[in-house]
Image 1 (spheres, rainbow, N blue to C red):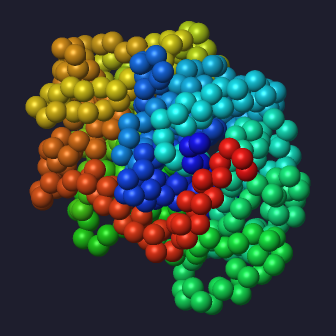
Image 2: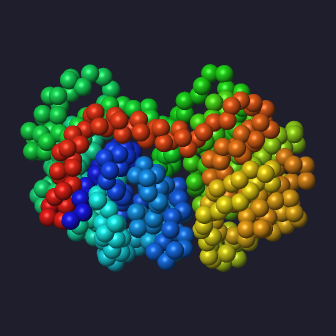
Image 3: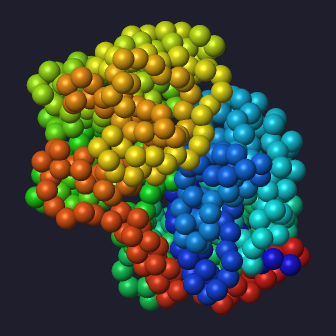
Length: 492
């Protein structure tokens, strides 16, 4: 029987994704074949992974990172259900890499019961290939209002018969109450599935919290499996979803290049920006609604899940005027995916793929025009930038773009031009996500903005952060106890 262990949280953003990534690296370094799994994820930060038929599909970015930590290729079965929010009440549903259309919150609740067989099939497929499967829950284990037909937390744990470790975040306060409170509201059969707890993000002297751990055990019967200190390393890893954008970013003294990023309401694949933010000498300045775009060396328009809707919001915020003023003053602009579409002359959505807006003028900085289509392009892409550097990237987009500026492509992929560059050379658009993770091209891009320094190895930095995270977990968690628990999978 394959070993398996599930980490659930007392709430969202308690650090489950990072802990699973770190444990993937811990067990991989011990010679085990480790595969990550999350039954249901909600995020517009998607990655591209292989489907069972060999084609490309979408998974949450967190499972892509966890696969990297485990040293394996990502697969759609690592995240069989991905929800990509399109509005405050509805999402696109991706099932084992395939788009299934849009569902609002109530419709999705009705749909969940039919998804469990697909979730279990994906999980069993991973078990057949792994020594240990590390499973991440979603949101809070105590959402008893969503327990019926649950596929993400206790519903999955019960169906798969896997042990659960509950994670609490002490940094946000009230960790004792959140752990004990979870025990209180869970039905007895779900309480019994929790085999222990972890307290995450602890600052200070760990001996001072020993009475707190004892209090949790006294009220719940669950043993403590570790106290994880506050770590700076997760800040060097790609974030899972847009919750990370709500936190202020640390800036380093002496930074010389500023890249301003007006933040769309439905921002997607914003981890495109992480390699820039990690590069010494670069400041990535997110611009929130109500703020003017500041003076910058470059304005970057990121991907969005709702291009036409977010373009309308850009105009409401006055960002269209800020962008045009920046360009008129000689500034550079780059748009990725939805940001590329916004830079064109016109956008059309005749099928209503994104919503009620059928057509709208773009910003007019690229001589291209985009028509939204029903079917999405999802694929890994390898090519060469027009400037000569090799590019390893991926595409996730609706829409087909044509126009005169595509005669000056951003890159060449499979012998065809991709993207567009304006006649003055200062505006670039591309559908390729992940371009800034290509060190040579990023170095050239930043040099054009005036940053001259040694080339920064972004992927090596992520790998080093994962190793550092694994080192910290080896010291702070009872790995032997976690291994023993994982060995009880299938009979728990």
